[in-house]
Length: 363
Image 1 (cartoon, helix red, strand yellow):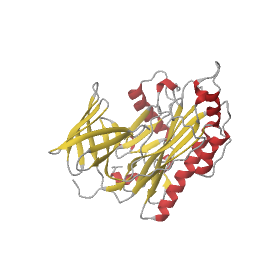
Image 2 (tube, one colour):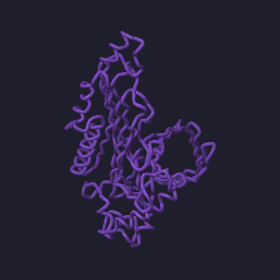
Image 3 (cartoon, helix red, strand yellow):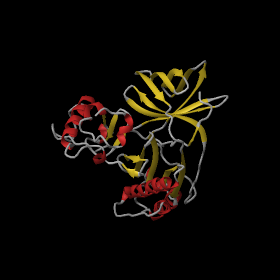
Image 4 (cartoon, helix red, strand yellow):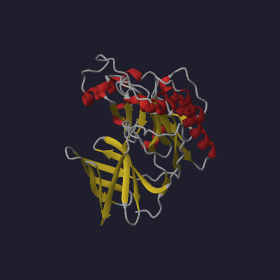
């Protein structure tokens, strides 16, 4: 293995099913920052793209990984013996060979088995850190706990809370660093409108303080988290995910927004930056064919020939992964569908001069 690791704080995502703990204090703010020496690998389990952080020391081997279109981090423990790596967590197990730049082998969960391949990419040095910020309002909950009645609901005893996992990057180019980090903070503030589109937050602190204005009858928990997805030579890809639950609602809501940044300019990469003018209809038809092949053609909110790609996409080395949130093109039960479009299927539609040229596409 290489003797030096990238200095990186990996973005650990809270599961959307995790609930806030009830605390007696009326409001708290927690700031935590951690630094690890790690190796970060990009690759896939079968056809499903993932990002994995692997931490090795003299005694233990730990890892965590995330599917690139999801927001839940999966933690693993394992060992390395003579280059053979084993990682497991819950029902999941990775078994493979570890060499200087890659890990290859078999992933299984007791029901399914896929080949996986992960590669450590030699990219310009950068580091990522995250800060966990939390504030809660327990005033109404504490009063309710003291005066329980037959009409008291469970959620009346819960504290209204907001927690933010804020991501920031460190680059040698400080102008680029400031531009990207300011953009992230601005986007996180926009996510604060989850319960009221009329709200506006200029700073993260204003967003945290919003729990102080909680209406006693409408408590909630709200989580916003940032997630590093990919890092190529000139492209940075990350997501911001939102989970919210208004106490007493039938179910929580969640959604994610994907971002691709051109590291030469610090600007957000849009679809029109990648595709020739007038090719959207052709792109949608190719995408519809791939989507229905993967997800079936029934129970979606579009008629045949009417499927449209949204703007939530992830740039990968072999193609573009488009993701959809619950309710966007189907019912809540349909989950978060996605469609992967290989560059080989759309190369005639792509601009020859774009950030994608680093992938060596033959136009």
